Image 1: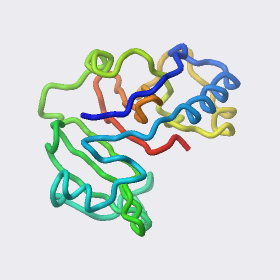
Image 2: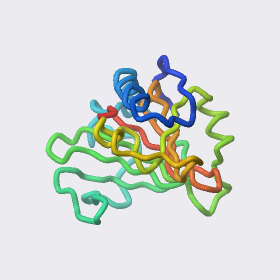
Image 3: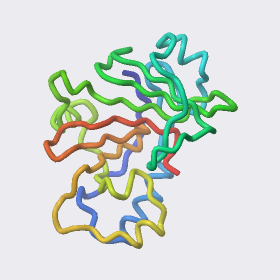
Image 4: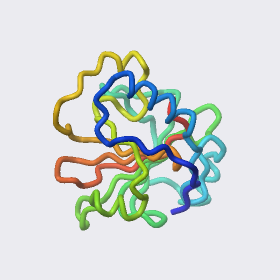
Length: 185
């Protein structure tokens, strides 16, 4: 896996104050690096680059929103066990421009799990932890309305802004997804 590296702000893993979270979000956005995965640079690479790297997709169509409604402005290419990753790789592209906007990696549940410990060994401890209910890049308004619980809630997200990615961790401390975003908007 090839990822662009950059400077990262180290923040306490359990953020409790909405004002602090708001300033952290602004800092994350300003420090977010455009990632490259398997030679595909988000915001630059196109559909033909994806097909050159991974071949024809096993499935293509419109990704769905949280309510299972197709998003016609986007196209999704899905692959199994491609590149250096065991599991499902989903490439989300703008339908009109065919530019890669997001890459999601979902580990194969039939294989030994990727754990929090594996993530820390591979990507390091310079990350920001965020409650999964907020998502990786909440707005200031979403943060101001958010009421954190006294204990960690699952899934939680490990944001690596210098790598342009986040990792979703479940209650068993296993990886649910690794997501590369062009920007934290």
